Image 1 (cartoon, helix red, strand yellow):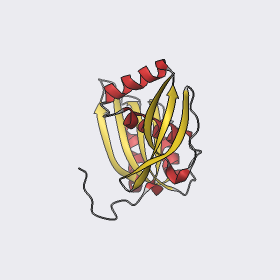
Image 2: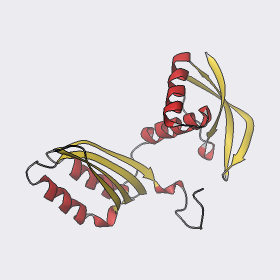
Image 3: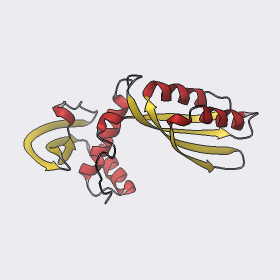
Image 4: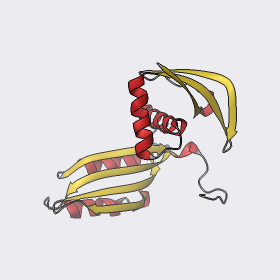
Length: 182
């Protein structure tokens, strides 16, 4: 068992769940960063899991284990959240692969996108090979409307690997004040 100090953002003082192989202990040591309090905690972690975290950190180019663990915890919290209320505003990343030669599929997908143009922020289209295309779309709107739209796309015959990642927009103001992306 290895103990290492890690800084995690703890939203609204809500307790973090213990994850398999990880024991968390919060201390009174904290620091202020980017208008949020960062809590210093200690984690007891198995050697194998730490090795995996270090590999992820190296692969993704994180500056520290703290950065790696913060992102891994954010991802776990996002996936563990209960379904977002249908009227809640959110951003989403919708991804799917489709076979463009499937009868009438390209036309149906295009019509669906035009029917929901008010939700679309941007779409990236990639030709994977001679048969398959990947689309990644950023959508913005009410969670229920986006979920219904995403379901109507990924359930089409010829669509595979559909995924929708919901991000609640209550995370903060969106360009309410000028800011830098440095």
